Length: 522
Ligand SMILES: [Zn+2]
Image (cartoon, rainbow, N blue to C red; front, side, top):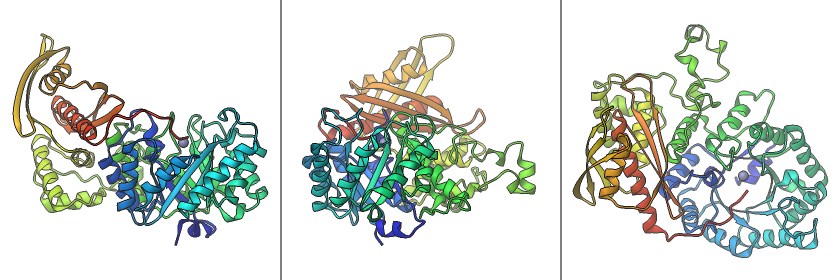
């Protein structure tokens, strides 16, 4: 069944994930192609209907990501974004060609704030809509058209543009709240108006795309659904331009938990949500706030907090959904150094990981190392350990050993040994603090021009023996690479995270020439 056929069943809502397109547009959230491929697999397993994998004309990296995702994903529709120009649309069509189900998503700015030199619903503007959608339909049966900044567009202009897109063969019409300006009843009214008044509206799927500038993205999206939209554009953890997009996990769980009042269903396997959330956080280096709905560390914290007593007596006292529903493992079974390989594999399965034999052996070895250093190994430790391994690119450089002098008597000093392309190198450097000394030692052995854009440390669990999870983001010539690492030693984690970021940066440099940064989507 195609996506639009599925939507024709009254209550089905299509989940369109734009973590890799709009989400990646948030400054610093860039993901490598390997990370995108991994995420695409997770989204498909989670049964996301449409994966917007990138903006193929924007860069060779985006093109390659869309093309390779199109090659490996078969259940979900793979979508690429294109402006209303033939060159964009052609490039997009080429990128999605390997897909079993492909979609071209093309857009035009319709609001007075975004229309440059174009008169209100001028014939030129309508021609652009008709021309771009017709061109896209000649290349692909599944075409989505978006009215950029739709919520600030004069209603008559919006109606005429939507009508032109439908006439030209668009199958999905997206009404983005590009600047996060609308509120629920206003947004709902726009959908009702278009569905009632635009000829051919009954033939297409209407879609929401809401930004969270006023914290209303999820509420607006749900209002859109209640008014007849049957697709929601969302991102994992709500990442995206500025304050982000409507969060996938929040919309999907709102529909699931309040099915009594909101009779709309998605196909999503919600127990995969936590896993995807953690992965996106790890590869982008964007932490999830503790009190974030559904996926925050404290979202189900009564499990171990002061409500525990009441919880044990009757879960419904405090719970409107179960942690297991979103893949939070249920029991936080503590593992230790006596836990065997079988228990470890079962634990990984419960956490949503399906590793191959080599990856499993490698992860088990790292788990044993960790269990030697740390008495109790919690779920979060295991997640950090496995994600750390998964987010590693080609390891040209590895940390062999590190000894650091820290404390009140400066200068702080780091003696670091790296393995670079198979050969060992060592350097001892001082710095303004131990982290600076470690990074100076890396720079001494691996000279590079990249600038440090982010250095972030957080504790994976509680306790002084907790693992530190470190994220490092580097930028060089507009290329951004993130590296993450977890270790009970904060400085070892810092060195490894920096080296991982460098590995990712070098891997990217080999593949792509520097590219000019171009205007991106909505
Ligand atoms: Zn957007």
